[in-house]
Every structure is written in structure tokens, then in C-alpha cells.
Length: 198
Image (tube, rainbow, N blue to C red):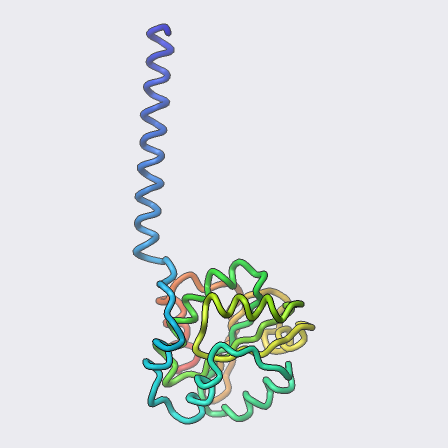
């Protein structure tokens, strides 16, 4: 190896080491700032939500269930919740961004679940068993309505995309957020701003 090629190799090695160190530091800062929290069990969630108002306790009693009835059943539930802040999350088991944000919803639905109704819409999932399997891996403290055709999801969110989150405040004012929630802090901020009137 010539002195010149040895020098080039040393510079390339130094650059590679700096790149690896930089990527490790970036990963470390992301893990403390925006990473999804660790998951919790349904038993833990139910313990934290005990003492919720009756309408919200009814949702918690159906935690992690995939309910039938589609759009009609969802509308009946929303009518019963009139006057209560509501957050609806449209998801599907095949949707990677949905899967990534589920731990965020798991935690925020517990931290805010005594004041806000959380409901899922499993929209466009052709396999009920895939949806149930996914819910088994990441349980949430609220039910989801099974929407194989996608009609309920499109009607409620005004979007064919997934995930989408809809916020209703106690007066029924609506805000629609397209895309996944990257952190508990971001979702909690939007719950306060759009569902709990600031």
C-alpha cells in the first residue's frame, strides 16, 4: 500500500467512524424524545381508569374488543356520547404507521381516559382475525368498530388514508388529523387543544 492510498484509507475510516458515532447519538436522542412508550397490559390500564364516569367506564369495559355493526353502531355510540369529548382513531392491522402509533394511543387513552372517550375504527381490514391478532399484541383501553368495507372510516374521517384521528370537543366541534402520532406528548397536546377546549 502506498503512502497516499494509506492516507486515503485512514481518512475514509475516520469518516466512517464519525458517521457511526453520529447515527448512534441520533438514535439515542430520538429514544429519549420521541420514541413510543413501553406497552402496558389491559389489567394495568383498567386499574388506572377505575372510577371513570359511567359513559367512559362503559367504553373501558369493552377494552380491546372488535365490535360489530360498522358505521351504524358507531353513530349510535357517538350519539350516546354527545357532550363528551371524543377521540376516534382510524387504523388497520396492515398499516405500519398505525402499528407504530398504537403504543402512543395506548398510553394517552389511559392518561386522558377519565375525561375523554377514545374509540377505534378498524377500517379496511379484510381479515377480522388479523385485526384481533394485532389488538392482542398491543391492547388498548377502548373498543374498535370493525369496518371491513372502509365505509365507516371514510365517512367519519373524510379520508381514504390510514391512520387518521378525529377529535370532537364537548360542543361537537371537529378537528381531523391525518397521519400517525409520533409521541405521547404530541397526541396529549392535540387532545387538550381539540377535544378538551385548550
